Image 1 (tube, rainbow, N blue to C red):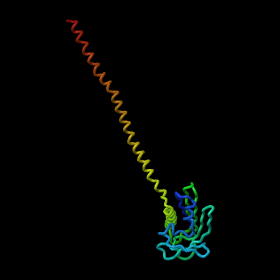
Image 2 (cartoon, rainbow, N blue to C red; image 1 turned 180 degrees about the vertical axis):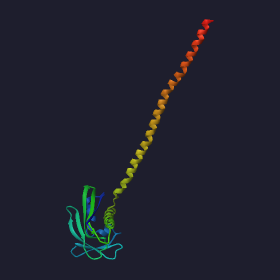
Image 3 (cartoon, rainbow, N blue to C red; image 1 turned 90 degrees about the horizontal axis):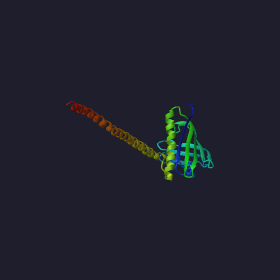
Image 4 (cartoon, rainbow, N blue to C red; image 1 turned 45 degrees about the vertical axis):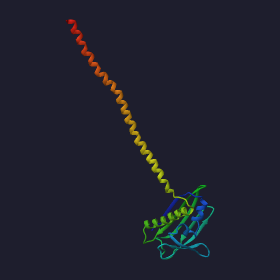
Length: 210
């Protein structure tokens, strides 16, 4: 199969250095995703970690390829061996943390891999996205900050304001109709008085003939 790419990019309302300290720690996955990674052990050189994944019998080994504190970037790969507990092979992943302000940053977690012959593209994408979103959300919880999704209610308030404005608009139109009706009323009154003058004229002529 051809190579696939998956990327998750989310904002965290915390300083970049604090976020990097957690999500960039090569042996710190148990801190940010304890429900998914049950244990993590480093080899003597500190470049290979052995992960115990929840629900998997066999451990997964990953090798650190790059760790750059200046650019807050980490690159790692899965160590190829038979029957790994993941649906992909030739897997390489990158974590980047970019400051957007003094109190916020953007986390980008991406990967490039090939699905196993026994795995579908959808299965691979869902697995990768689960790991990345779990790690990012776990970092937020450790830092005690909320998710960006909490901004959604603000949109609902804006929508309710638009609905309220739409309801007020018809009221102005009905007011315009009422004022038009009032202006038309005097015209009807004048039309009724006009015939009364014409009937009075014949009576005067009859008096002169007598």
